[in-house]
Image (cartoon, rainbow, N blue to C red; front, side, top):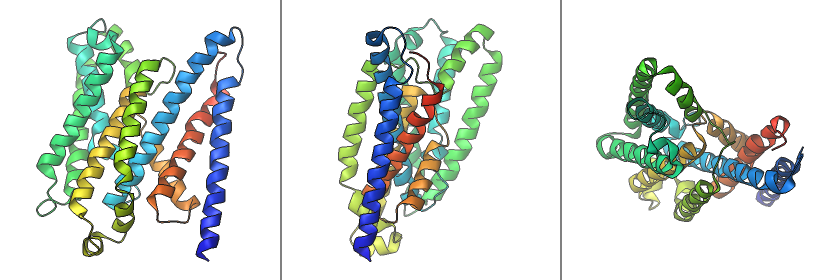
Length: 293
């Protein structure tokens, strides 16, 4: 019985991998007109950005839902996306679109990641203590702070110059059209580092599905793993958001599709499946709308 389930999951993962590979190949070569040497490198940067974003969001969501024990929550619930909007709006409001923080993509990318990760770390530092404050208090506070930050962003956008506001809108919506290869490389390095760090927690996450008390009885340092997962999820979400902009519901959709499609409790398989589904959704969904570049 168990061997049949493993075989079925293996076949399903192979099918997802083939679909993801076909989506990537289709995006790279579909409807290329004119100079191939000009269009192909640009498509490579775009598809790499999509893959990094897809994997980062899927990885963060599956791990986050495990520690919260809730399949309708995502890391964006703690307000990291809202912090990105605050950073971009404040830059445009006080410094303008000609500022180095806007023109220099590296500076904008670094500032966004640092601000979002620091926001998450401060939130965890003051609101997550398992012996006093449960994780749901952290989520509730994150939702309230995210709503407050959203109201602040709306207020500043009302006051901002209309020309600056049009430029700001390009930053506040996810876009894969003008991704720089250097930023893609930096994001890939961060993603790989997170994968290496997260690999050591896979078995503990599998046990955490049994609940806090059972996991602790089996030797899992539950509270430490929860904090590490929250930090890791924040870094992944911050990286993908700073690279292409906020994507709100992708993680929720692909994670739950992976739960339904793959019959397993192992996070290594669930994360791989969710990542492949996410790649298919992002890259494959972009093929019909692709231009000649």
